[in-house]
Length: 242
Length: 242
DNA sequence: CGAATAGTGTCTATAAGACATTATACT
DNA sequence: AGTATAATGTCTTATAGACACTATTCG
Image 1 (cartoon, rainbow over the protein chains, first blue to last red):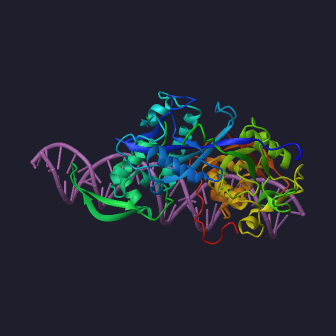
Image 2 (spheres, rainbow over the protein chains, first blue to last red):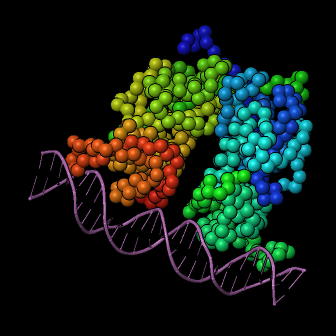
Image 3 (cartoon, rainbow over the protein chains, first blue to last red):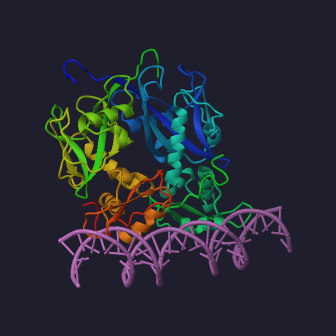
């Protein structure tokens, strides 16, 4: 490789977000309808180019989160998911996408972003099954993001990021059930999460107004890794995420 | 954002490799001595810029593996580790590095690469402790790579990638001990790995010439995930990797 | 009261870890 | 024989999962 005559190729960099939340106990991902070419009118992940040459990747992800989903990045779990750089993935040229995974508590309504034509929470089931088609290689990115979320639920406290500040153990269990697509025994789950040090902190109050006995409220504890970890039940027995 | 007046910044992309192997039962990482500025003369990870605008990221990683380490990419475990893009990480300008983790069986000698001044297997211990300093943010990349390798040893068959095609269970155990920096009970380990479906396939032969009873030979089975997974002993009791 | 949900207790199967014991090579 | 390493067996304890049972609310 001759350094005098050769110079490295310049590429464009986008940051794309897989933003997951729970709505009516179903796992959903935020999609926007593209307002510009390419793929105008198609559904895609929120995201966009780096703003300028000095913008940090994570900062760019936080900015997109704010601009396209109206979410405050500081409160959210946000972590890098992977980088997608096949030569043909974007018709505009060589565009490499750094994907981030974000987890949000149940949000009221489809947030209208500033850039996108429309924004909508789409059921993950419909995206994975291909019922909803996505632009670029975003289907792959969503799949990878969900797989990462499932893994992280096993051995990190990520699940609490789906909950509001105070939550009941039943709500936490519904997070696991929705993301994993399984049913969990409420009683065993109850004891299991309680005995993980630093996972949950009792808040000393109860949530009334439901149908049965009031449930104790908890908030997220200081731990970030789960020890012991929660084991996901055997998959593919009866139901997957569908 | 006005599409007429604004255009996204162009950046340079490098692919860097964290190549791990075992030498004398110690976990080692391949480093090269940089022959050009910046950081001329410093130790760094093998890697380099994309060759041209149409080169796939994984292909670029495989090419670097061949050029700088003289390793055949096809036989090796190679997976994306993360992308590092802080604005100040490279004095040449905005350079984003996509890092890959590669695992190689015990290799005879420091492989002299074609591009680098020198190439050397360096003990991971010395790199993590800071005894050996690395260019750019490569210390961070190595740390992340080792952490990923440790995690993957728990629930994937990655450990066999450190071994030659045929290996004994004692050799496999030494992989775990070196990467995790722990001691494992040989007898319990023996039974545990045997009962994981698809992990090991008996080859029907034995390796003689050692000191004690000949050990049966195995090769890697078809499984990629470990079920049940191997649990890493409590860390920080007596020894870490140091 | 009855229905519904929260929380506790208990039993069983399985897995993890400590460690004794047997097997088979080499010198 | 003596030593070293491989492979197997056994026991104890911890954990996972099934599920009976009690507790507390609402209508």
